[in-house]
Length: 518
Image (cartoon, rainbow, N blue to C red; front, side):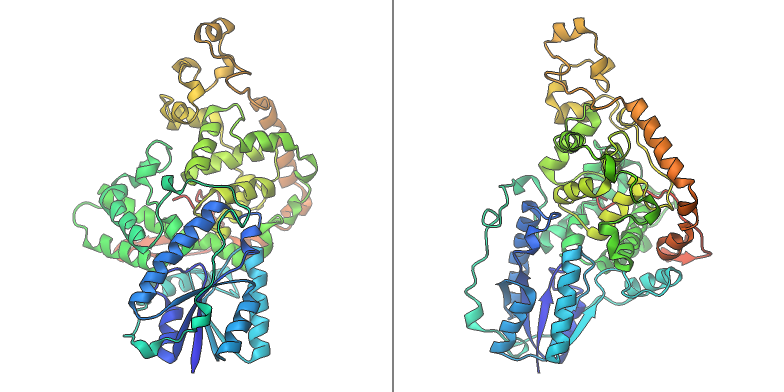
């Protein structure tokens, strides 16, 4: 019997359960479907496409070394599968589950119907610690642990008879970014794609980043070297979540010395982040609608009718007038990455003083984050915007954050060069500079330096009033329990000996900060 292994957001051969099971059962046709419609979605960008293509080139080489061939076919998924089936009828389709955007969700439903109509069995396997058709959140933690504790999936020995291919499907031209309507993007300042670079990032984190992780991931100055920088490899599937969890636990077990050792503390914190990574993706898996509607429907209409395009445009351009915010946006647009606290700051400023709806800001940020993971992204966007109904609203003051995390103004001067001549006294509030000083420096607020879009204190006061009035309304309060039941985390502690989460009792986890930019 022949089968097809459909690669999606799992561009690797290591710990690839779908590929392993297919090779154990049949001859395998390796397939990646490049659907131009996928890349026309509003959350996709040129950097995502280019990183995917580079990851595919790496995967192609890995499969080729096994004696197989990766077919990259362009078109609609059902049409591509139908064409492949017409050339060589296959009985089974293998893939990993994908918790993606609404487009991929609808695509997978269409493929499922096609399989039913054609009498083809579709085997789907867990990609992360995310449970499809989860009955209760109370069961999730044990399911996560069971998945992470399973042995890594090692491929069986392969030979020429392990694979099948079609010469007529090998001469397929792949569209360029320009042909898909994307503007050019500089990938040289972004992480390099592929398994080898994922492993190199892991080794770098073990040797250096893990010792700086605790206390180093909040500041935009220290975060680039303290963070693992593995999130982009997880989101494209060039490394598996189970590999990282097991490697981290193995490293922890091999450490000697004090429990307060900085590397031990860093790895324990990192392991916790891996757990929360899956926790947030589970929310989108359980409720796909949170990509476009409020998690708590009691917040419908909170911001939608007060949207102001000019505020969104200035925020996107990094011209809010708050130096740290604008520096963060400049770095993000240039490099495709930003650490978690600064991502939260961008969303907080958009959501509260600028009072922008999270859907528009979320789409823009999705395009900018090279490590964009829909489940984490939309859960966090809503959490930071105050529309989950179960999390304490987090309102980050851009001036305080700057003083706390960039006290000498190094970061803002690097990314906002028009601030280089501004003295430290005024670096985070340049609009307060006396006119005489602006004349002396030859740098003027309103000409060289953008003014704040709004008065921060007044805007925050109005935002808090609107938000907390809504939070205290009857229709919001009475539905909180429903959101907790579906999405609320359950209390967990850690067995230090095995570095595994242990459930003790259920409660509502409020205000935990995490996003995909670990």
